[in-house]
Image (cartoon, rainbow, N blue to C red; front, side, top):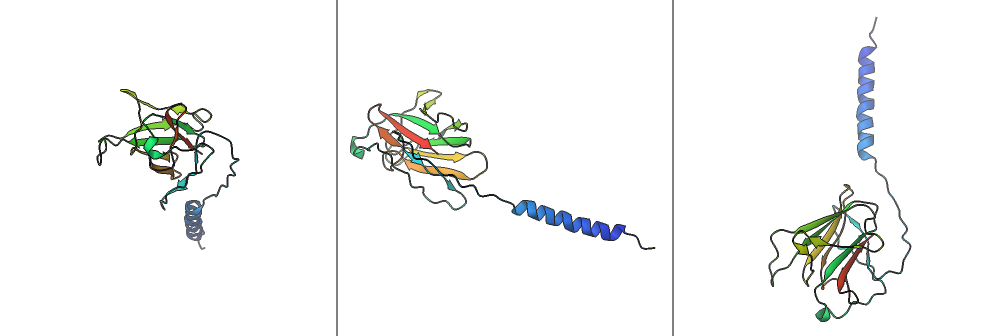
Length: 171
């Protein structure tokens, strides 16, 4: 009498391997349609790694003054995404040198989404200057990132001369 254990083990192994391959290859595509909202802050589209390409910010109605007229100021950050996000800053200290330790802040999904939050450092107030580099990336493993942005040289973050601060909104 032939045993059915051997063919059953082979069939079970093949189905298990196929199941693992199916799970590994499974992915989903999500299409989100954004409604334009009038806002004094720029909105920034996200990109996916591993194919890093510069993002193109969408300009709102707030005019950016002449870069020579831009001064230093605080950074107001708004996370309008449904992902946890880390904002990183590499501050420029002289003509071609940057601070040794970059600063970073973590934002929960939708944190500061309406008004935004002013970022600060443990030592006190944060002041962005022309040439500082700001980048943001999702912390949920999706690979989304925003930037890098060079303050006063790229269209984002936006200088708001009424309140003397830089504004950055991620969505």
